[in-house]
Length: 222
Image 1 (cartoon, rainbow, N blue to C red):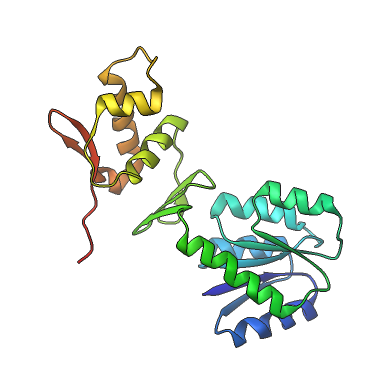
Image 2: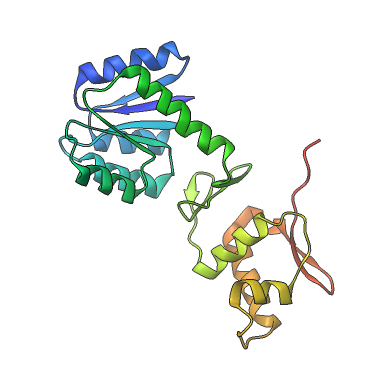
C-alpha cells in the first residue's frame, strides 16, 4: 500500500513517513498541492495524508482536484481546530480529520481504519480496470473517468448490484423511471445502446437476454 503525504513542513512529512515505513507502507511525498495532483495522476496511491494550510494550492482545493482524478481515502491535517475547517472537509468528502499536533500512532490507526472501510465496504465496484465509485458517483476505465448521463449511471449501478441476473425491460423501467413513466421498451433499449457505447471495451458485459431484457454478465473467478 502506498501513502501520499502532502505537507509543506518537511519535519511533519519525515515523522509521518517514518511511521508509515515502519508499518510496511510505501511512501510518496509532496510539499504542495500541485505536486500532489501530479503524483496522483502518475502513480497508484492508496491513501492520502493532506495538510490544509499550504502554499500554491491549499488542501481543500487540492482535494477537489484529486477527486476529479480518483476517489482516494484521505485524512486531512490542520493546525487549526475550528469547526468550520472540519465541516468544509467533510462536506467535500474527506474520510477523517486530525488537528496538529497529533499522535503519529493515532494517524496510522486512522489510515488503517479508512483503507479498511474502502477495501471491505460496498462503496465501490471493481472489475479489472473498470471502477464504479458509488460514493463519488464516478466511473473509471483505465484510470480515466468516463462521462455518463444520470440515467446511464443509474442503469450501470443497478446492473452491477444485480450481476448475472436477467433483468426485464419492465423491471428496469419501473425501478429506474418509476411506475408512472409513460415511455416504452425502446426507452430502455436506447439508453442501453448509449451506455454500451460509453463503456467501450466493456460494452459486452451488458448482454441481451432474448425475450426478457438485459444482464450484466461477469465470469465467476475459478
